Amino acid sequence: MRRPRGAGPTTVRASDSADQRHLTEFATTRRGVEGFVEPRTAVSDVTLLLVAHDGEWTRRRVPSVEWAHKFANKLGVPSYDAAVVGYPARMREFNRRQKESGQT
Image (cartoon, rainbow, N blue to C red; front, top):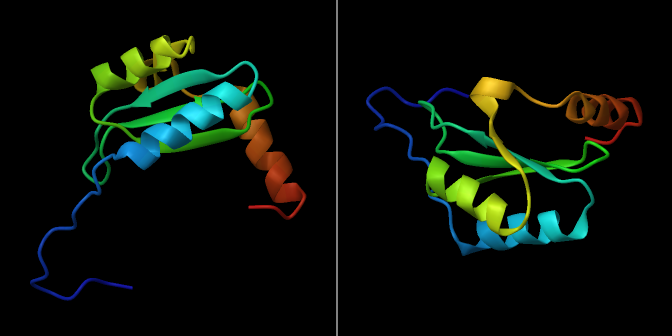
């Protein structure tokens, strides 16, 4: 679906306390969680991608790159810049398994 001509730019929803609660819940209820901080792009704000030991993952908007690293470290979760290190193979494997089992 296309936006009508002359429509203003899209807006990106800012992060909120629900995002922080979700990230905290994910990080504290899974094993081996690592954080991957994704930089702001033209279409999305800074995000924090959390990946568990089995590849299960979640992504939420965060206020800033610095905030994401501090948040992860406060929870004892190692954090990396996704643009530098890329994404873990276990996440791709998890996505593949989900697709093969019909879950999306």
